[in-house]
Image (cartoon, rainbow, N blue to C red; front, side, top):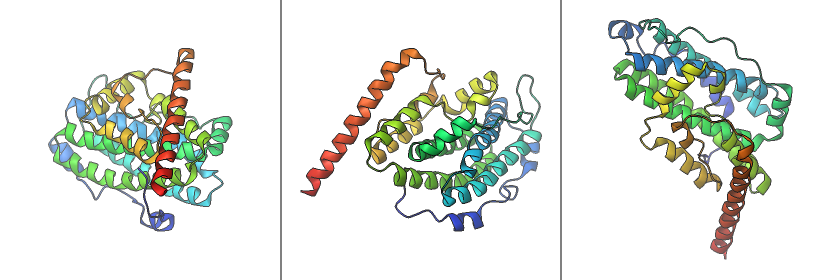
Length: 283
């Protein structure tokens, strides 16, 4: 989930993808159209791309760390290019009654309070973004398998190459900002439990979110479990954020307060256990 070498933001910005149109052929989608499930999954992921940019970019652009600001601009360009490529695929695909393939409505920018909270919790937020990037990687690999279309496999391969670098950056940022302090780890575990992932799904129409989520995440092959296990292994905190994608989302309620307390206790236990193991190993 994290990486050993520092992420080179300057090199990444220079090499960021300007377009994906050379990585696949639209004509192939016109000649061999996608089926309904693949079209729904593509529309779902295209809507998520627009939504995650609207949610993350305004906060990242005002981040006090120049590395984060520099990364954010190139990150947004690449996510826009992914959305554009998916839009091209949808344009070349058959129109299906009841399936929303039109560009989504603009998503409102995060509130000033939400943006301020995000800046005050850089480590936990970075970890959420790292997990979200790995979830996106899983989603595009699933799209390639679901579509049974060679050209979608080519497009998905190009997209995952982009998203892997995003996951590297956020993973390194989370590792450097979370550190050992217990409060930050509790905050990270609580965010991962409370937030609706993938980021931006709450902005989608109920029908597209429900059907798209089921197609992309509801038939998991163990990949979601591996994402959570990587978080637990790298950061010594409990995580079920990815596993929960296989079930309908339920917003936190007052009854969840007890679960939050239990989750915090799990984090305390996990961190203390990790510390004790490290101390014993150093003796």
